Length: 66
Image (spheres, rainbow, N blue to C red):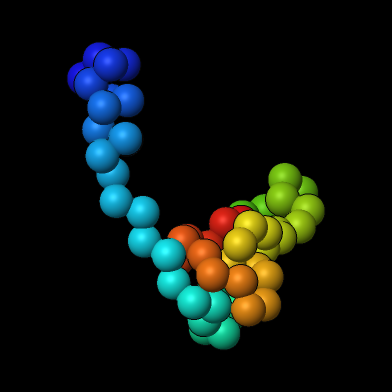
């Protein structure tokens, strides 16, 4: 796929927004725990939840940014 085709695809891509979901926080915590146990602490010092799903009462795309 060339760059023009990719841009055209992205322009047509549907964006889903959802009201804040308190489960996003627990989903992050579970993934953080999983990654913390998997990755060596000599490489990964901390894992943070950021982006719109980390902000209470904010409508967001349902994607947990880490």
